[in-house]
Length: 164
Image 1: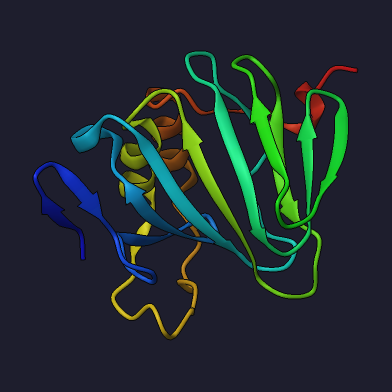
Image 2: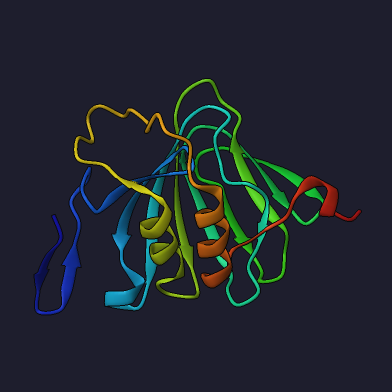
């Protein structure tokens, strides 16, 4: 639960609005629509991560907290271990994948407050029991995913559309 005192926002460990989004577990730490800064923690299962995509209006940054990840930035693949920081400029094709055998954790922020939160809320499934860590059984509605992504500056790139 978020607490505020004199404008300070505190989200204790293990708390924050939490959703399953396309197979990944996402917890908001700072909601860009309410505080002007988007920060969320991703708990990513082995081989999990988002599809390759581009943002035209925002940069995105990642800080690896736990696990090992492989990041695609443009045409370059970069391996990242705990403590690694990645800054992805707008217009850059990117994605990441948990390459480890255990769940990994990343802290993510973007420079377009609210866009990720809106997308996650529109296509994700709210988590009521954080302890269970059980993903929804039903597949996502891909028409809804693609429509929401476009509205929120998340432009998925299919393998046949990649250049280089």
